[in-house]
Image (cartoon, rainbow over all chains, first blue to last red; front, side):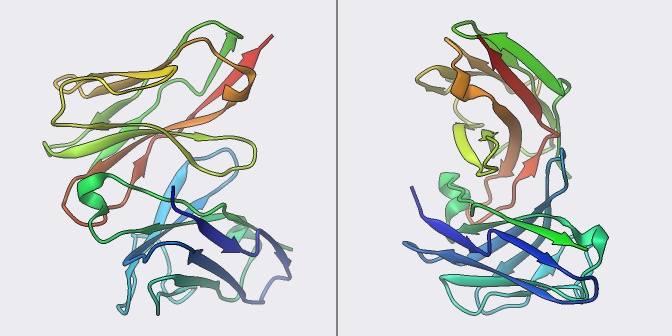
Length: 118
Length: 116
């Protein structure tokens, strides 16, 4: 299967600071990146979708100015949580996808980043 | 919009026994995929099994099999010969087959505990 890395795996920050999460697809080129958020004991909820070189599309209720997504290359995407608050504490998971994954049903996931905002 | 429902928040099964996890979904589309994912304590999402909607034959992967009832929009997962390592959260998920990368819609999950 595909290898996906996320960094950092855990981060603790103070309220008001910004945190950047990196997602790398190590052995394939991800034309599309999905970012999910998972609150404790809950399911994964899609936050946004980005295509390489294009602006991200955000799901309803997700603030685009707060969650900045950059997908500048086919192997790297970043999610920046700006001016983080305790309610942003969550588990963030990236899912890089191949352009035609919709045909094959292939989905890959990063190991996730646990963000704690104090 | 698609929705996925898992009505069993928690399940327990004894080692070596069989357990079935339920999932129903709602869509007006006809071409899609259904998945079961496992999320162990490490929280890494692991694909358990995948079903293409246009295939009538139920998918199987070793001890894991599904009962896919397209008309009823039901997609249950059967785990045979349960092992302690099967203890995890299990998510049912839906994905449209659009020909390009598509998002997953997840159910709320079922926490499975395998006991001795």
